[in-house]
Length: 610
Image 1 (cartoon, rainbow, N blue to C red):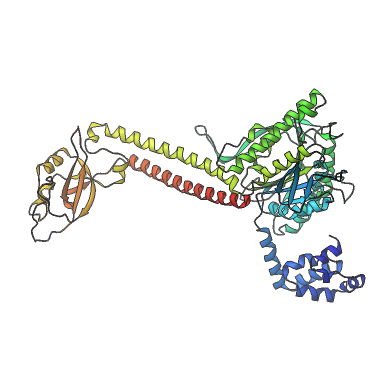
Image 2: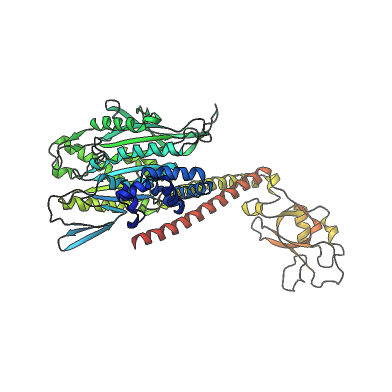
């Protein structure tokens, strides 16, 4: 940052003259000003001048309260919530001054004859924008995401010749024209040095890989374009045995078999990655097209692997993908030969698949995500569809090509609809609900099958009909000497129905336990007397429902609690019922989460559209 720019952050009155800079070089005045400023302003104040930097460092070393406030500000900034997706538009300088493209800070308007189309994005960079302007807009969100250990994917999208490769790589020989990829390495090196834990046994290390996807095949740009293969891997949660397969994680990670990964030295991270970026960029496949003499004919993916030394999670790493997409084009109209026609078909396949993946996520209905339909989308699955990831797209446009510019703006607008984490959370919740539904259905089937097996057993089945309802209820039968408990009972009397159920040892379900009311004359004989005596009785009474058998209707009988004995189901039935109930509860909770997420996503989408 220039000194004048840093002072301007505090207001016009703080922009000093040359004499003022000399005064600020004295530590006393700079320290006094630093002590007056709020903690969030100290970070900008220290960048004004070498004297202010030294003054702020001395101030933090001597004032513990200010240091704690500044640490709290930095932690708050790290926890700042960023959008799931950031989309910016960069307009290539156009020699034609009569452009149909009108650019504002966050708005682009494309004139279409007598009508116009307006698009809104997170940032719009006009023709005069510098490389530093583009990087300063995304530097904070990218670094915060990496420190939160979230995967980051940076896309450069646009038609051939619109300036994608210039934005990503640029000319590294000059600090003014260096692209985002080279600027990221310098910033990342400083961030890792300042955030290193001095008590840690080993600092996090960084590895680098560089590949290209050409005609749906993956080539290693750091190993003479060696052909590599994509494969899916899952983390092993529990080891297997001779008779049992290992338990694997539900989340699949895509790896590139045979890909070169070079480890960076912590003190030379910027120089090494910059050299490897230049080495890989020089190996990319380029060709002459109707719009560009050196058009990239492949998707380049540079990956920075930040390997954290987390003892609780072995092999944990955060990946930063820097993707320079091949230019979108109408291959059938602009292809100069059959090879370019085949290249264009594969390029458009990857880009259209990326669009369908984004569309499925943005709709938030749990639709199938076709990430495996293209090598590019499968490779970037964890960064595009992952719940712990952030995506940044810079769409480059060339105003003199109106049709291609409009197509790019529409594509970028569709991608910007993926603003919320809910868009990736919904498909995951949908999948979890389906898994729980299958689990509950399997538990229900096991329970019903065992109930049927027990009920068809003559010796056991004659006592009761076990099913999900009776297992959840209290099942009883009349004990052998149950008639004795009816003698002298003021409310109940023994009937033939009681005697039959006692002899056959039929079991019933307790419907209620209370003091019965006298039976009416037109009601069936269920054990209640028509007139109750005044004598009090010890113990409560229960109404028991006996299911009908062999075509006979069921009956309801009143019995003293002392005349009943409990009927316990088979222990295996209890276990299966418990499994089924747990599966049902888990399913209901997940369905409730899904409903809340769908409502929240619909609200966010409406706010975004408004």
